[in-house]
Image 1 (tube, rainbow, N blue to C red):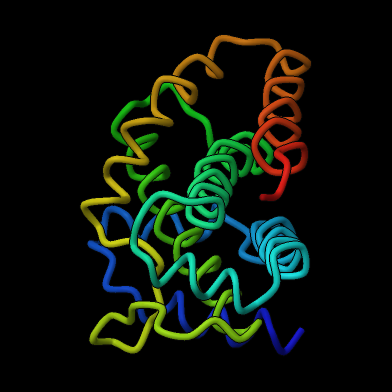
Image 2 (cartoon, rainbow, N blue to C red):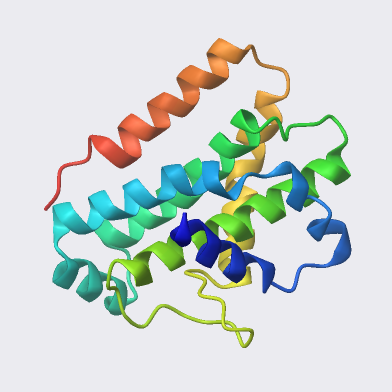
Length: 176
């Protein structure tokens, strides 16, 4: 529980605009991190801390960076659905996506640091975040069509879609 409390302290320091901060009550940080933390741990155990560090430091597209990006994208989609944050109100939905995206970004960065990865960027408020806002906006733009499709899809369709993303992008890729 101490881990979640420390992570929650980080999330509370994120300078969200009021309209985004209002979404805080809808999102369980514990549920979100229950997916991101084991995924980050698996990356580090599979690749090795030194290789993950090297790939992150290279600042180019490689296995670790692709994995982290996929983890962030999948977590956004998964948590919006599983935490019942989908809504037909597009303004509210956009605020929720931004909130979940930033919390996921912080959660992944926090876990990377917690598992020993160095040089993860930090906001002036002392919050680690893997991606800058510009990169997070690109990720949000990529997941938005999937989120909008989920609004009108059956629960089994959405569940199968999420599991297929996890299998394809986080479990099955061969480690080089």
